[in-house]
Image (cartoon, rainbow, N blue to C red; front, top):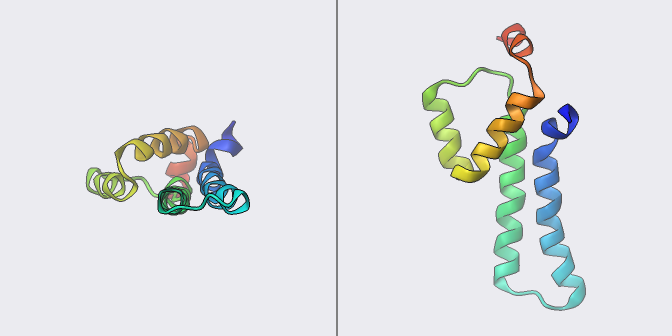
Length: 94
């Protein structure tokens, strides 16, 4: 579970790639699929960076990440970050 939490950003990126690839092979590509795929790939990249950033976040940095990642995905990535790393691991890094 801890490894899945560390790699949740990669999973989101793979879902975004699936949103891009499946319509391409079925011949049903439209702008909606492309936008959803792009957003998921970018969210996955930023989420992976957020989850694997070992620095303890302040209120300002968490607010900026929430704006950058959108609110709902930020909550998912925040929970995954808490699952992936214990307080001792974060304290050892800081």
